[in-house]
Length: 143
Image (tube, rainbow, N blue to C red; front, side, top):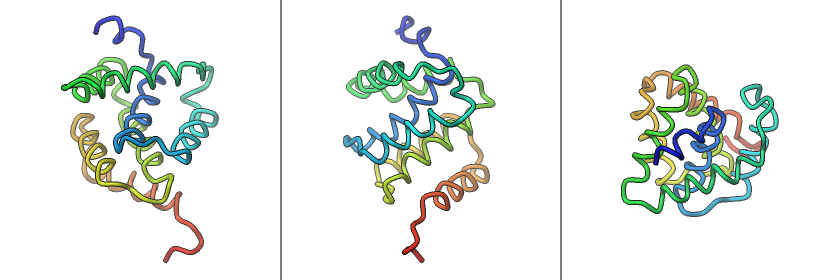
């Protein structure tokens, strides 16, 4: 496990959280994957990030999800390798991925709740982040 821990960069951790929320319902949707790619392509936190690492990071997430305590291990890796000032960034990106296909599933909600707890994100900040994600992913026909 130590080898994996040292192989994650802070941007890898952000990608891992996005992949985790996408995979939480055991179905990686195209819209979610496109959202991850768009986020990695456009946000400054991913400047100079080698996009080939997305696949490696996804494999780490999938390997951890196949273990009994894999989610706990994933959060441990993130806490060990992601600076705390980026915890809300990780949560915001995960919310965007969850909202990308227009439906947030129960499994995604549970994972987001666990992320809030594990990354110690206040309820007020989480609500603001969630509201922003919802606003960004509304369609013209929604009321």
